[in-house]
Amino acid sequence: MSKSYGDELPTQEMTQTTLPADPAPSVKASQIPVTNPVTGAVIGHMPESDAAAVTAAVERARQAQVAWSARSVRDRAKLLRTWADRVWERRADLIDIIRHETGKVETGALLEILSVDHVASYYAHRAPRWLRLQARKAIIPLLHRAQVIYKPHGVVGLITPWNYPYLLLFLDLLPALIAGNTAVIKPSEVTPFTAEWGVGLMHEVGVPADVVQIVHGRGATGAELIEHVDFVAFTGSTATGRKVAQRAAERLVPYSMELGGKDPALVLADANLDITASELLRAAFENAGQACLSIERAYVVEPVYDALLERLRHHAQKLIVSGKGGMEAHVGSLTNQRELQRTESHLADALAKGARKLTGGHTRPDLGPLFYEPTILADCDHSMLLMQEETFGPLLPLVKVADADEAVRLANDSDYGLSASVFSRDLRAARQLAARLNCGDVHINRAQINIGAPDLPTGGQRASGIGRRNGYQGLMKYVSSQSIMTDSRILQPPSLTLFDPLSYWATMRLRVLRRWLPFL
Image 1 (cartoon, rainbow, N blue to C red):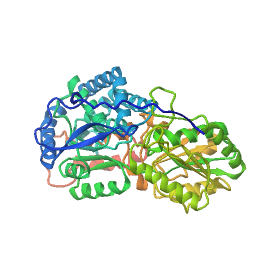
Image 2: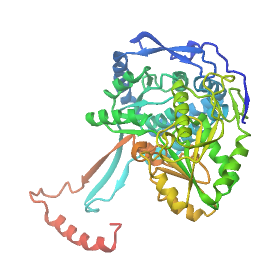
Image 3: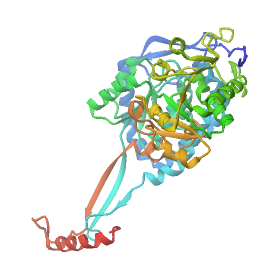
Image 4: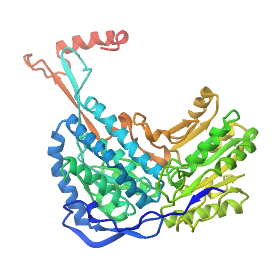
């Protein structure tokens, strides 16, 4: 049985100091309560933005974008790097806010802050080079000049979830701002204070108030935002993502989205079982399983199946379930009643269809209203809901397979394609197997480590999303290219033919030369 601590997070009301100093004048009087999931207590309220407030925010952002984009990329990047340094200095405050709103353990909150800090440094160094004017090869190099410039889209609308309220907002917001866009954010109504704190600090370091704004509300607020912005960055469920994509496509505005996942782990016969067991537990139960990158199903080859089950039992006894601060806790609270109900439903369905429970399987009301024990299930199969639907809770189902080929086939038997993990001592074979998996990211002998690697583009395939975060792609999605072609022959007599004598002569000779000199 996993260890636990029973103390609670503070329940005091969040003060208005966490809100912008000059809130939008057109917010409605209705208030959205914000609850601490560890205690069930209301920790504050957030005014809900009406349609007029959303429209006004986007209009202010559009006006502010002219001056913001006129600043140099280096200047914008430097300002946001200063912001990240200020966040780091005050990270203890941010950790408290994240934990108040989500119920996650302290290490999980720190992970969010560290990852965003890495991304801020990464783009601060690289964005000026990537976004500067680029020379390209012209049709006739000596006669023409070809260049590419990159222009921001305008106003970016960001709709972000509650499970990683800091990480999944600022991983997108930073490159959007550095690229010269302004932003209007609709954070989850479950975790609005994290967004308010981070954006408020941006304003403190000198980012103009209209460059980054927040509107609050539920689904209708996000839908209204999509009606007005020039680019949509959405993170959330696949079902909602389909609606977002449909409306963005109707408006012909670009979008990116990270959606749900059902990430598999493939355990081969030569895997280090202690490393595998500890990594499966960490990746399945991080944030109480409420992560798109959670390992939600594991396929284990028959020769090591029973041995791995024993290692999992052994390591699971060391897991600490807690609402306590400090770095020693492993698993915190679920954030919503909905996730608890789905976890219980998926577990009941699996047990009814023949799954075998190895650990957990119970709520922990002694710790708080939404705590659930980390639960390991053996002998699962694809008839069970927890093998097909995203659980978003602390369940780890294991399936016995004959060999690696069966593991790959079952891993790909899903509508999702976000991430996967392969465990093997044969790294070459593991990489070859990784290439056969239908997903955006694959980890070998680890899981979720792409979160802290800003140079790696991350994102899903199929029902897990469109577009990429991080890396070159994570920045360049926030700009559109404009090609500029210049004919330098301004003193040459005009011609009404497609091929004037000089162009014809040069084109014919370049055709031959380019077969052997491709750099021309």
